[in-house]
Image (spheres, rainbow, N blue to C red):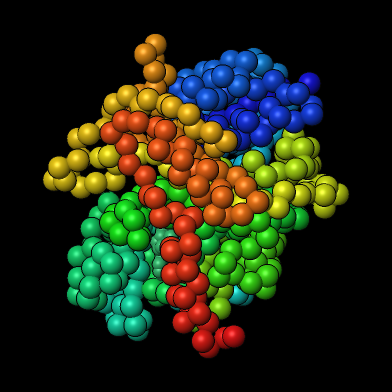
Length: 444
Ligand code: AMP
Ligand code: GLY
């Protein structure tokens, strides 16, 4: 019976906890969280609370409970160096060291790595630490995207046509990013359909999980501000309606080359998740970014389908033996819809902005699975905080059925909540397929 440490407190970690405890090895789980997640607490032998920067406290729990290995859910503890601290204490982890987590925490690291090693899929880009030459570079690109060179929770990216319109308007934004973050990345704006490809990596081998499409915008029909993700779907054939098998193979090949480049560049093996945000564009598959962890919500789509024992999978990632394990996922469709407080993601002057912390009544949610994110379990029920509250997941043979399982469960959750009813519906998916048909004109 292995002892396992899980770090993190969101719905992604709730599904990680569930997938770990259903292992035939019957592991004992110890959770380190910055806020109490009642779903994870229920599955754990012990819960310890603390900040993710306090790596000593995390190592202390791991030592005290003699854990065999740790699984790190979110990016913040990776960036704080928790994997390095655990390694010093002789405890292996699923998750990269602080240096290798630059794959996510430094967009310039990743773009430069692709450039240096001639890996396909890069965007034209340049990194600036002052305004010198910036205006001239902007002039060389038809449309641009500007981003800080660090962690921004998916909300720091400014896209021309969306967040600003002209190159002149980009200049003060770049200046502000430089003041706040010290470095700004300017890259060509890519246009196409996005998808998430979460890959497992032991440093030498890369294994893909089924592709997922996330929905970042707060409102129906992809309107409104970007959020951490309002929901996501995956299909029974392990493709997406607008994807081809070659697109997935191209994404896996890029990820393989990046894993090899990381090894050559740093001398270290990347042991953890390489989650690529890819886009199919008129010129083929392009990389938007990597994350050094599972996606939230995307983890809720793929982990419930995992047929391989997750403890064996974690061991293979740690030991560099992923090539010897048959990794499989059941052929079913999934739809995840996040329940959020009505005020989530809204600007401060919006009338619903303040309607956040409140009680949710949980009725009959049928066959759906519920994964807790920011909720508090009190004597009189579940309370939301200010962030995404519960991930509701429908799983079925067909996408339409998975969607209706999720939608019926959402209807059974009463309170000042909101969600995106369009995620996983035929109307929204048909729109994506039509968009893709236009984009693919040049490369059938
Ligand atoms: P990132 O934090 O890099 O994932 O960016 C968040 C979102 O910004 C992505 O999901 C895209 O929708 C958008 N984005 C990032 N880079 C680009 C780009 N070069 N072109 C167009 N959109 C982008
Ligand atoms: N689904 C977006 C993320 O996990 O970063």
